[in-house]
Image 1: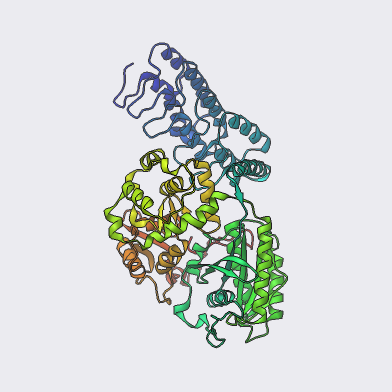
Image 2 (image 1 turned 90 degrees about the vertical axis):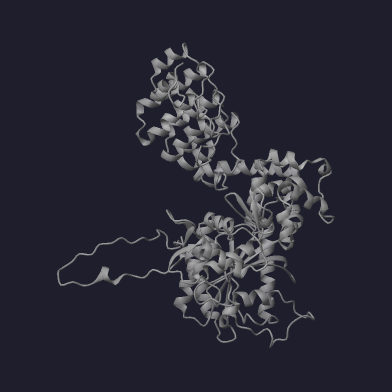
Length: 639
């Protein structure tokens, strides 16, 4: 039972070297339950041996590993013991499989699970479940995968949990495996929904896409004006061309909720046409309950129209994957200046030829003046959007009723909090602040009769919500996921499980109500895009932009100065806002520099001519061209 400086016993050393005979001898002589200074047992040592060896783990070692693990389990060495980092032996084993796609270790994983390790264990770094590992990292034949699935599912593994990226196992699988996992997941999901009660979605997203200055914002404003309403502006007053005014150009994404005649409730997403912002568009592209309006400027040359339209459809396709259920309506702006019906017809045929597998392009095309809200063409477009909405809602899945409650009541209340006095927020902090705020609000809805018996401190402890994770000044803009879960448990559904919480987050993110990234939930996507991403990433010709940036590197102080300029009266943590931007891969921290971040979309690099000077000596130039395999794919700017 002698130990070294790290607390490792002789048995641990034997397990680390996978010496089967020596392990068997020591098991009868030493304390196999001993832990070293890291809280690790002999079983940890055997499984960590795999991770340390990496790709150099020998074929003969697999047999030795399985024998050592079986002998340790036979002597009742506990497989579920976690070390001080919270990892059990299976966790380290899975991490090796994730890194090196080593399917031979799945047999060892089966032995550990049979010996008592939790089948729901996540890998130590990537936080992948056994089903994520099987679906994403191994690419097993379907028959082999299915046998593993049945075994681990029987042992209690959960195929319905999300990983660190918020994705379910079926989202990584291919072919028959994907269909099998997706069907099983849907069946499980519907059974859970029945328990909670379901509701039909009533809104659809309308995404306006097009080049800068095409008239998207003007079109959105015109669509919202009801013909015959007394509040309508005179025709002369609504003739505003947003391509002529820098002040009217969209920075990032504008999100507007509206109710329109013949269509009902819509959520407009007006996407900036500037390439700087294209990296952010994929946050809101989705296949579910979404209509795309592709707006093109008819005064441009046909070649430009084809090129820009193909690029924008490729941008959507790269974000949401392959499906022909994505409805796209083609709209030609500035129809008062040119008869573009034949141009639109040719453009539609060209796009349909290249993108018919991915999009359903409407046969009906619209040539109109985006400024004329009363025109027959504009009324026809409203009616067409209403028809597309009806089709989208017919194929949309039911949603948990709890989502509707959160969407209609809790989110508006949390967003209103941004208007509260910041001094009150700072002086009443943490859990006492939350309790006081909840209990003092007479207009706050109470959905559950058990609410009065809920103790805030008990909930915070159950949800692992440390006091320091509550930042009152951020509430109204964004918060950490566990705090958002805290609000839902306190006010909506006290018995909410993590599994269902992930489902709610996934759905609210899909419909654009929130932006969920890493450990944060952004409650106001419009604020994130317009007041944060807009000022930081807007081009030089915009009235708002980062000054003096050429290599994309920006200090935290410069970011804070810019954001404070365009968020006067708003109070939030700039450092945590930058964390969100890093999670969205809009920027990244520059290594070896303190509080410096690089925004790839802001890099202003040009070709260095000295590399291409013609010399008198015969030279051979070589290079490499990066190109997408499919002409409907693109490399998104800013990535």
